[in-house]
Length: 212
Image 1 (cartoon, rainbow, N blue to C red):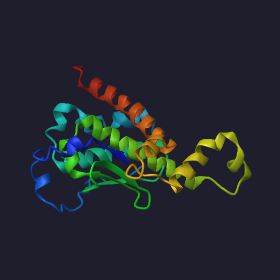
Image 2: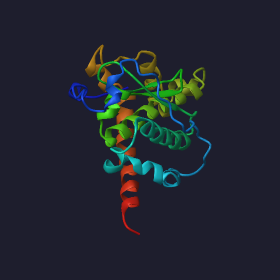
Image 3: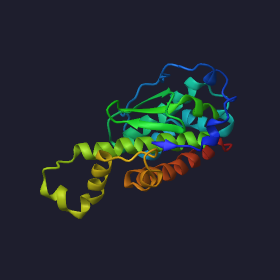
């Protein structure tokens, strides 16, 4: 889960119709969740650069809510292919106050708050998708390991996976304790992955904008 400053939620006049309907239904992408396209991380991003370039500041402001959801689904498809995990879908709905995005492992889905999405920067939205798909990866790693195996239970190689398993089974939300939530290994790992991957996307987007 990724939280944003309460200040962002105070900007209630932005986003037009996104704020005017109290019970806006789920907005789902027209692009299907998938991880069928093989390739390296670089080739995956480049194969979808026309779509991914929508995270450019200028292009982002022109996009409708549906277009933004499609764009984020494209990134999820790239990421699930690269990480080798089950496809993850995305949808927009109203989340708890201050929450920009959250991952549901049982739904194989990432949910984005449609109000915050209307006011947020493309950088923050891209980082949110990358953050949440990393949580999907953490769950997948735990699911795929044989926890009856002594090596998995004791070897140093699996130490991080054991911490992820414990924390996800005993997850502390930010509403319970922000400090504990923020310092969980699963959250630190997701923040690191989002930050690292964001700059890869940013560099490709900038390169695509350069005149040939």
